[in-house]
Length: 187
Image (cartoon, rainbow, N blue to C red; front, top):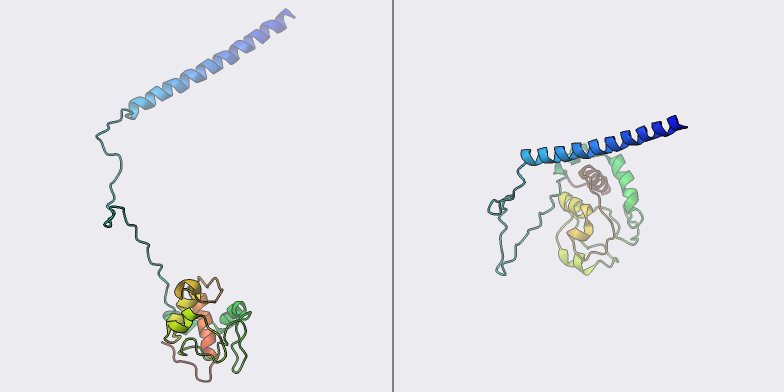
């Protein structure tokens, strides 16, 4: 029994010695780190780079939003896929038709849309924003609209999240181009 208590005490001493040694090593490493790295802070010394921000008349810094660049589709139209465009149109088919003489759904029919004036389908009630926007649906304009419709024409009734991939927009616009008696020439 005496031997057991002696071993026990020896084990406890080893554990305590290990803890003391670990604390001593951590303390020494901390002091060595303080010697290597200057911890005295000099208040006059600048520790960051200054960035000049233009100010408006109120003295508050103005941060300009970077315009989102939408890639043009013109170069991709020559190699666009009608098959992929047809697959992509399934997202549009809930609200639009593309066949000649087809009826309007929630959205107007899209037959002969390329180079067609905006908001001109008979019998469809366009949003005021789109009706007043004016112009024609050219290749690039339609592709930009399909990127983010609500952002392109603020106030449009078209509830579509948009197509982010430029290749998808090119394929869809190319598919829509094909649905015309006389498809518009490629740019």
